[in-house]
Image (cartoon, rainbow, N blue to C red; front, side, top):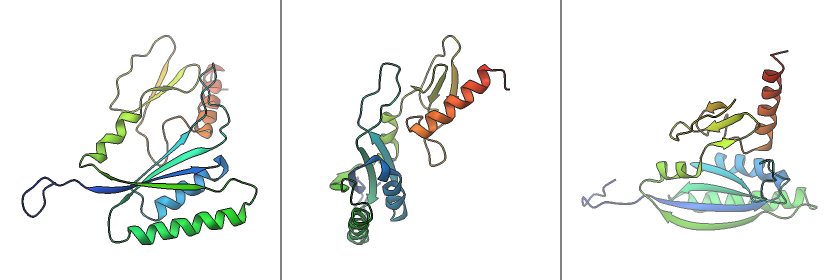
Length: 175
């Protein structure tokens, strides 16, 4: 991207990192999308157990990227009000914490891909994005799909449960 003087310019973004109880992570993700986030990522910070399954998380991190534009402060203000409302509605849960960082990156649209690698989500099923290589072994079933709004990376517990159910049906011969 070049500015009016012909110099290389970097697009600026506002990275929002929200530490949230797991019960509010989907709500927070949805809200930041509604206010204009151009990318949202939910991270569970708890380690996986020996079987490579995610343990129950005590909190999650929701990362979202807002364009650095004239609406930035208005969007942040709306988000802070929403966080306060959630704290009032759910007083027993830990209040969502918001941290922001300005970032510049002219290739941000591609950089996020480096965080998504092939992931074994059940005994036989591996989810992999199209831009990654993976060599199946044994009875591996490789689901090649890119992370998105309708289907993610296989990291979310609901996605894992669905995949486990599909695997169980396949192993029983479709009955």
